[in-house]
Length: 57
Length: 530
View 1: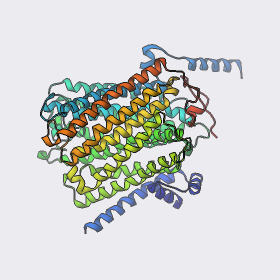
View 2: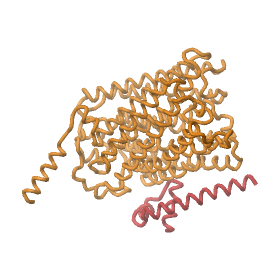
View 3: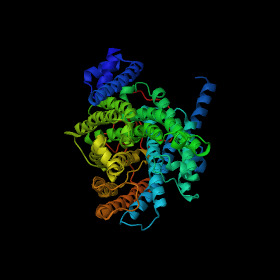
View 4: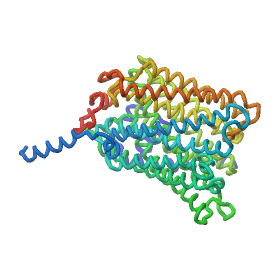
């Protein structure tokens, strides 16, 4: 599952090292990636919201 | 094999060799290539209609003062031009490409649900008729802008109901098309065609189809609430009855921003096929392109508020949408970087598809940068509803989506028709388009920065000169599309016979595993992809 989160993190940035991508393609299932993406998006939104709260305090 | 089984197999084969002709072929077709062709011709027809509306707008704006049309009709023109171009021209064109290319690129015989495919197409026709016919009903066509904002939209006549019905039908068609595309891609890939071997065009359409399924019901909900506000006494968006017009904006743009990506992601796929073919190098960073596309799709759901910085959201809300919007530029920038890296030290030639792709790359980037400018809340508050916004989204949707459509048509015309187009005229079409487009839309940045509001038929004298240039450019751009029409018709009717592989760098299944032109039925036996 940690591998799925790492893959999603790199996808947010939009790049991935070839060897690691090949490793992802072998090990990760689409279900794990989608679940990790939904959780990561929620974390991302909350982090942005936290940043906004911080600067408008 | 027994004799009975052999006969059955033979009968089956004969059934597939059947090639219907005449009007019935087009009315009852379930063939993905026929339906793709229908979509493409339909979208070009709508493009010409929307284009005529655009030229009427630019003719009126050639000089200050009211010359040609009255203000109500002008507002209808801007509204229906937007709706027709978004829902009638760009989206159906991409569905046409999807129909033609996805089965061939993944090694499938057809789409997963061929009859539903036929129905998807024949739904868009009545919707288009409703939109265009609304000009001829009492009160004229919808005049609220393509965003259909209340309370203006609550007050107009029957044309609004026609527009709402059209949007519903188009939404149903898009959802059915998306289900078809997702099922085809996930279930009908040839043996060995793993997800990460699929051409980028297939990937971008898979993600686009998910976006469509996610947001079209949201738009349907919004316009249904408009309908009940108009006729059934509800007050969803009516402040007098306790409703809130701002809520419509939130719901509309929750649909509307992913909609922008619905129109541009397939363009990324087309350009990702063409640039490697003409640079004679594999696409740089294929995996990162897939990742970046998925990332853009996810982020597209959390940036809608940047369309409404001026409605009075709390500062925290404005800041959130500003940060999120700026971050979406990162994966988009990765894509631009990858296309440039693909061209780097490539053995490049510049036939028409490549010209349109390079034009896309340069001009879409300008549209992206002006989008970043508009993402900055305090700047947007100044530029909101000005011509700067008009310039920005035309750089994204015309030199972005439309140029990629042209690139794709020129690239795959030999595969579709078996004939080559006239390269000289193709290049003339590109140069006339790119020059006309820039003369039409670049000055609109200046007009917006100087404060000219959008959607007005008359303007103050200080805006006269750039408006004149913009109109001249629009007419050059508009009429140069007739060159495109001529090139396509000439190619179909009397073009020189194409070689089997007209583009030496093209390496997807439709080029490597199928004859040119593609036969009526392809991949009845799935290829094995290594």
